[in-house]
Amino acid sequence: MQLSAPRRMFLIGLLPAASRQAWAAPQRWRFATDSNDRSGLAPAGRAVLRRAFERLGQLLEFEPLPLRRSLRLTELGQLDGEPLRIASIVDQRPQLLLVPVAISRVEVWGFVGDAALQPHDMAELRPLRVAHQRGILLLEQLLGEVARRVEATTPDDVLRLLRLRVVDIGLLTLASGQAPLRPAQLEGLVALAAPLYSSSLYPVLHRSHAQLLPALTAVLQEMESSGESDGLRRKAWADARDGAAALSP
Image 1 (cartoon, helix red, strand yellow):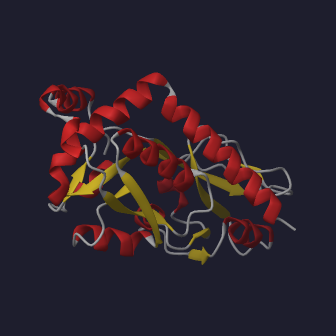
Image 2: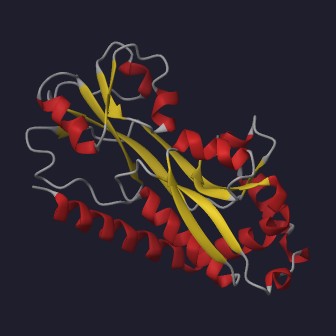
């Protein structure tokens, strides 16, 4: 689920009543970050949110955790929030508040060894053998009706299973706008022509921090409008790509 334009404008329209002076004294905030992420998604989310907190005079720290565990800890109030969640995550979780500014967009890309195999959406994966990275909650939800799934530890492991023909298709999550995989990673493989799924990603807060929501929304909206967030995302993507290249054999 994505926020409708009228709903988003309504929420942002509430902001003039908020005062950023309420956070004149720095506080320390603890957010989770995806410990299983091997793309630029998590680094970009951290970069944007850390800058937003800096602009509010706040200190933000990140704790690497698996997505399922971090969601539970945030619900319990043991963490203050998370940087990147789909909007529907709050629908059945009354303890969570959505910050109504998308700071990233996730895409699910498919890779195949046989170029003739070209599924167009997630529903067409049901009869196939599918490899995906372990611990990515979004993929687990999207693949709920796929019976033949193989979990792998890293993106390179997903592609390795594909080359060995253990699976028919491998799925990876990437940030929208992020540079594609390196040619060496895709040797002998073909990327689908378009992503199989995409969704905007939003920060979430524990409900006990409702007083932070208007100011954080305002500063994130300013950063998106000015292009500051886009610059931070692109730098994070480039750094993640260079780091992955340095670790490759």
